[in-house]
Image (cartoon, rainbow, N blue to C red; front, top):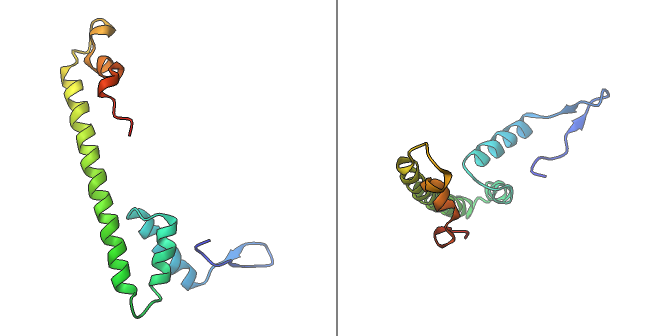
Length: 113
C-alpha cells in the first residue's frame, strides 16, 4: 500500500505517527488533483529524490494537467451537444418526436470511443 503498516495497540486499534498522517494528507491531496494510486506512489518516491525529484514531479504534474484539460474539453463538447438536444426538446408530445430520444437512437451520431 501507500501507507506503512501501522502499529497496533493492545486493544487492536491502529496507531499512526505524524509522518504517516502527513503521508496520508499527501495521498489525499494528490488524489483530489486527479493522480492515480500508481502515480501517487511514484510521486512519493520522487519526493525523496533530491537530484531529479522536482523535475520529474513537474513533468508528472504537467502530464496530469494536460490530461485534465483534454477531459474538460471533451466534457464541454458533450455538454454543448446535450444542451442543444435539451433546448430542441419541447418536453411534451410523442416519444418518436423527441430530439433527445432520436439522437440517442441514431447510430451514426453515437461516439462510443
